Length: 78
Length: 251
Length: 175
Figure (cartoon, each protein chain N blue to C red):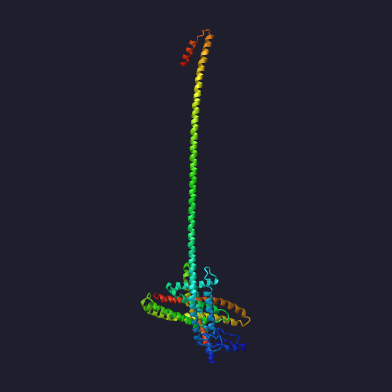
């Protein structure tokens, strides 16, 4: 019974941790959206900044992956 | 503990993580460091893919390239331009190093998408070694090229003086978090996609949901193809960014 | 269904395979081997070859461009010579036309002067003839007058005095 409660807590925690991935999704969308709005204003400068956009996406996405990892750890490793 | 992930009541069986198990190819013994495992097999496949693309594909040395040769040249030009643009012209000497990482990650990621395959880049051990390799190389290059003044990377001279120690602390922390995020980003992305595909595949056990599940797997698979390339690109471009920091530490 | 799930539970692996530290050594070893192999292949074979091919292609393209530039220059030169030949031909044709015109003019001028001379001669001849005719006419007038005067004198019953009549007619005709 005690183990079940611990496991329940772990699962609830995993579910909560997954909400962090939504934040990463918002962040990535924000990065790309702002890039697009800037690129449509000045298309000639857009080509040189795609790499910067991908770096931004990578940084924003990494945090979402961290929360996913926490969820996985709670599910399988705790 | 993974057995507890199975939902006992519905009869659905979830083994999303079983695809990542390292198994010996021959026999059933313990996994020693020299054992030939599925890791060895799929890494050998990625080496073969690199050789096929960059050596066999370009063996005709044609002025007008064939399809495989133009893909190889495209990969070369892509990485070369990335190194030149992001890390600067003096980083071109490190181009083979970045090309090696990029080609290995791209091939391993795409081979991991083959059904029943083993994704070597989904293991934190693999990505962490590559990320630590990049981190150590970059730090050594930085100290070798600039000596003690490499530390000015952390001392932002354009900031107001009272803020500088705080910024220095943040910069140092972010510098040491680099290999962690660098490795976990790649491993996490690959692991997440493959686990999600497996979870949807497990839902196909119910006949009513099966068509929906097949559709979902198709969609996720398409996304994974994109992610496979983007993660390799991101890994390579972050390596270039870190290299640029090492070669030009003064902001 | 339930038995299926329990069987699966028995064969399930413990935890996340990614955190199974016993396999780390194996993965790291093979990873290092793989990376070294790829690095050696790339630096020894693939990258120099691709760089060669790209350089060769760039060279041949620039060679082709230079050749095309050459041909273009040649074409321009050929056009120039053609233009020059055309201009020369035109100038020559002009010269020929000019010469022919001058010749024709000269011929025309001589012909006209010849004709003029002939006409002048003819006029002179004509005038001579007229003079002759006039003088002849005067002589015949004198004769007619003499004979008439003689006839009149005879008719009037005078004496035939030809000397007197001649004198009188001549003096009358003179003044």
